[in-house]
Length: 207
Ligand SMILES: [Ca+2]
Ligand SMILES: [Ca+2]
Image (cartoon, protein in one colour):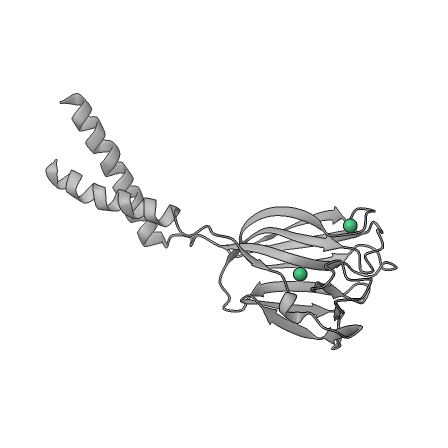
């Protein structure tokens, strides 16, 4: 019994430490890409430990960063990033390939004119499989926060749902590090630990 108890406590502590892994959010604001020019274009870029790419099936510069004084910029004096071609699929993934949780992203229409447009999101899960969701920018100028609360992603993509409406500008991409999925071995150890804890409690109760 003592053996059970001395072994079960460290395992339970391990379980708690895994669940309590850093949940502090990181925000990518793209403000280091702010430019005094009318606009700058990019084929792809990295920011805040994430790679951003865009594709319509052939190479090109699909990202635009409006200048700080450009009236299209939904983050005046700083920067957002936009996919500047209809049907350009934007994809973001951690540069080191690690799984991440997507908390939220701010969006505005491409010209920050207060035009409502649809965006189709595809969430690719690190454990396999994917899910989709369609959201709409509102008809008000300025950034709008979309909360996703998607956990354990390997990547997320989005594309305008209208071929005639250019894609949206985005900002303040908020993520947290994904809690690692336990390996089968450690999951089994964890289960054994929890059984031992439960067993210990039962034995103490029955004493
Ligand atoms: Ca910004
Ligand atoms: Ca808006």
